Image (cartoon, rainbow, N blue to C red; front, top):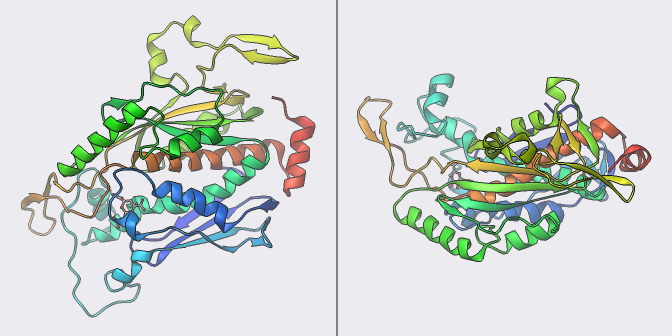
Length: 386
Ligand code: EPS
């Protein structure tokens, strides 16, 4: 789906660490570990996170592709070490070990466990769960932050906030005069990344209730991007349409189950005249009287903010486990228990911001091109329309 960028993540949840490579970023983009670490810290936040986040303090180490604080146009390599590795050196050893390790044989409903062991011919679910753990999203955020920095340098900003946890809904909708930077400042000040203080209290309570019941809760969050020119993406071919790229990138996150673009699902019960955003002309430019399209028309950005709503399912690892079957004996037993989060919706909103950053940089480079930041900015100045 991405045409100008390539990225890969590697690393097990309890291995030595996470590795990532991002290729296709132009030269002379200023980037630092400090900037990356701000986003990594945001991904670790949120009420309802489990014990692992107390162990880790994720730090992105820029290993290559950057010199004296600026990108070289070369592949960018990032390493994030796992602090927890010291407790797993035997269980996750790369080399064979002489000790017998207890295998995980009770697949968790909702996780990759059962399909994964069938697919790869494993007799230990750990071989599947280590990679399908949400820990992998650390590296997505680390590399995605390089993309975020590029976007910010050309006036494009991405932010998010949580609108629902379980049945508790935010009653204050996002005021589009607030920039995504302001939005993130406000949301990050809330333990659930919610703008509505009353809803926040109830959200915290429902997460605590889930935790004490050994259960988990999911939720919904909104992701917003501003400062976009006309025409990122294309109406000309199915795989060049921006909403196809955005949804495929978002749906690559394990726990994401649904996406609404603009009015989304709600539009199906409305009249066309209620849904489509009327066009006006003011101060020498086209304006819109609403943004139900969520910034995307005909597979392209229409210079309005991109507005997405994402649904996250409750985390599959449960302290009070669901029924499962022991892979060895085929006896009915409770599913495997592993340290877990009771809610990771606030963290998920930060991960979704990063996924959007990759798509927007890719589309920007596809349309405007440039081997250096200077060239990209000159191309934007010469031909972009807002
Ligand atoms: C996570 C790391 C994991 C979990 C969580 C998210 O670490 P550990 O398994 O050592 O506790 O806390 O992942 C899951 C609950 C899951 O089912 O994948 C992280 O870094 O975000």
